[in-house]
Length: 154
Image (cartoon, rainbow, N blue to C red):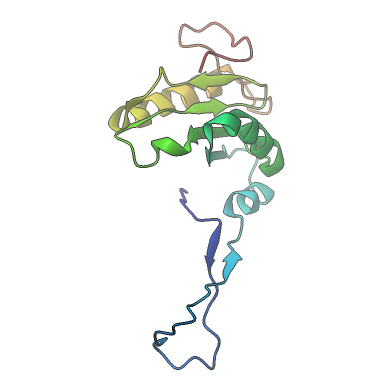
């Protein structure tokens, strides 16, 4: 499953609203309601054989910290974090954070069409390095096969 959801959605119009809202010089206030947390819901109902990977779009200054907190809070296997400024950019820069503290980072900004193969390689390496039963924590080894020392340069 993949989901790109917003954290909020517009509150439905009250039942007494009769269609189109007319222009009003006083303006209009839109009320937003939080959306359900799909990732946390999936984690709560997951099968032990499932791999759950979350995504975090965050300001660069707190991207890794936010990813670590989200990883623990949501109880998922990996978090793919990328800075806000890559949202509408031609390229993407990302870091994959694992529960062992390991981090795999793109080599700077890469073209978006190269991101999926890069991410699949990171996931494959993390799965290959986990325990044979799949019950141990994932760790993200370096591409050369050596174990992660905790972080790789961002």
